[in-house]
Length: 301
Image (cartoon, rainbow, N blue to C red; front, side):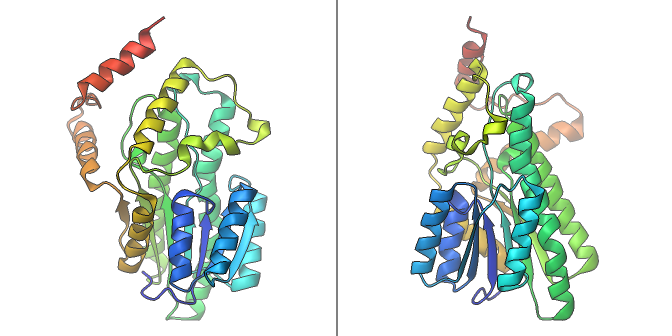
């Protein structure tokens, strides 16, 4: 946990929009040094200009988080400019859906590359330098927050590739928490599991690398995109509210961070399915008209 953020350094991936940008704004208000990381140059430039205008010391780096070498270079740049970061927010993510057998190899490489390997690289690059700083100073405190999703605790249909990436991030984060507790009391970990919140995630294709270019989307992928877009845009909880929850959790040393605590009911049902070895519960049990609509759309010729 970190009880005083002033003068501390935060590394924020996906800092050009959504939760990353909102956490940067809070960090600037709290007097933090900010390392802003994004793959979209114009969004990164705008975020950096805003945070500098707010008085923050800023290091802005255009990085593809799925790229090991670029993330290692980022780590070296952070260490040189600010020293070991106190807060690392592995937040960059992309959204994709469709029936799970319809995703191409390139789809898998892109989504797992950003959503999972981006977090892996953040943990791999920054944890050792944080541990080193903690070893040198008993008063030093650090925290790592990884962005997963409620899709990391559930298995909603027609979103398989995204679910897989986010389940892996939850598992990685839980293991990180346990592993850190074996070796230090000075560094904590959290996992952020937002439900539908208006961010830029439903427009992720804008940053898809050319080498991992998408094939023409299938019917299920178009349907999935439309459903997620509608759910995200109609979300009542805002990105600034979720960003505040992140800082509150870091200050309190709280591991699980939820944007929609009521959505946990679905997680309980899933865990009961597992414990009782019963077949997975219909995810549309409480909204049968949605399930009927999706089945009809997918089965239509």
